Length: 412
Image (tube, rainbow, N blue to C red; front, side):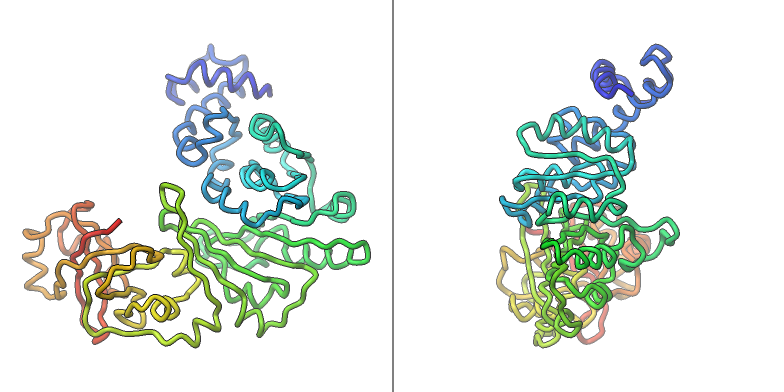
């Protein structure tokens, strides 16, 4: 398929909906071309939100799934911190090339591999626009079949890999292990180690799903040096593993001292981070409060995923509301707290007589539940309150076991 022709047709008919394009027999010479133009039209708004630089470059997207699976622009650019300017980068799972585009902007030389022909062709077209001045090479092949050849030919100092969950794995599993993914990180590490006599000294940056079991990963990957959890506007998007194949760290050392770092990227691209180790978490002495202060804090999803609950309390001098709530309070605002911040307006007991009259006082509100017997949606139905940003209610359990609804203002 002529990709440039598809882009030209997309631009020509940009004012038509995807459905109109799909039904218009005069657009394109074949049904495949018409379908490709319709796909571009249907993805324009999502592409503009997720990858604004790619949208401006008028890139080609083979399918909706390809765009869904790609990193967003902020999370892709975040990964540049793991690249050194003298690096030779080898991307074993190139995909749509978004992470490769970001990483190759730093490395001195970059090699992309992708076994899917349609995706490889699309990426060749797109990177031809986006990476004109870079030293890059694109290879259409199964990287794991050619791994030893790629390693000895290019001698990469940084390998990037994005293992996908195997098709035989249940899609509804809440957490899963690296053994459920392909390519296998364990196999990759062993094959790199087998080439030590050829002076293959590299490190691996692996992007994995937020559903990954952190503790199990620390137990099974003996060369892991760091785990980074990335949230975008509070929502966890991906986990990055830093792996040094030529090192072999004992399990106790990994479990205790591997650096865990949580990041949040806001809508302006600003980042906040918090890091610690499981040993620091285990020895931290959290503060607990039987009463609420002036401010309430809810950590970002990336921090909750890493489980550094007690360390937050100790290091930032905030008190936990309950051992299981993961909500914190104090009397002086922490401007750079790694999470959402609220000013407490009222503490409302969760009692029948109050529930009945709350709707008249707070007809609309955003509701969050933490360590509470009802979900946010169930509580909303019970309170008969409409969803809105006009007010915020945080429902939770206090240290003494009492159930409360905290009415508060969201702080910037």
